[in-house]
Amino acid sequence: MAHDHKLEILRGTVKFKSNTQKIWGVLILLSIVTAVEVVLGIYKPEVLMGKIIGMKILNWIFIILTLVKAYYITWDFMHMRDETKGLRRAVVWTAIFLICYLIFILLQEGGYVEGVYSNGFIKQHGF
Image (cartoon, rainbow, N blue to C red; front, top):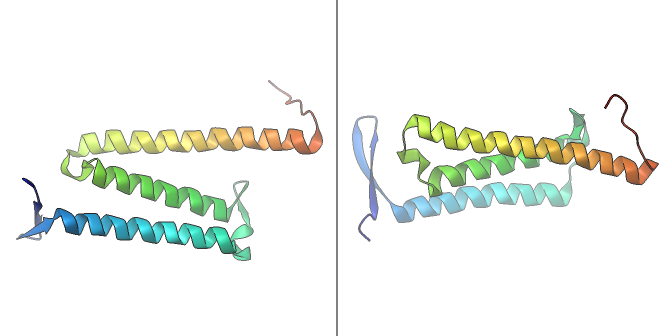
C-alpha cells in the first residue's frame, strides 16, 4: 500500500503507527465495548434496574455505549482525527445530536404505544 504507515508526533517524539496496528486497536476497543453490552444484556444486573429520567439505568448504559462506538467508528474509519477541529465538531456533534433526538422521539412514541396497549386509548390533554 502507498500509505501503510502514519506519522504521529507525540510529546516531541516522532513515531510511525502502521495501519495494521490501528485496525487491531479498533477491533479490540469495539470488541470490548460490544462484549460489555452483551454481558449486561444477558445478565441484566438488578442494581442497574433503577430508573433515571424515566428510563432504566441499564438502558442509559446501552445508549451511551452505542454512542461511544458510533463516535469511535466516525473518528477512525471516516478519518476525522486527521481533519480540522471545526470539521470534526461539525460532523461528530451533528451526528450525536441527531442520534439523541432520534432516541428521544423513539422513547416518547414507544411510551405512548405501550400505554395504548396496556390501558386502551389514551387522550393527551393540552394538545
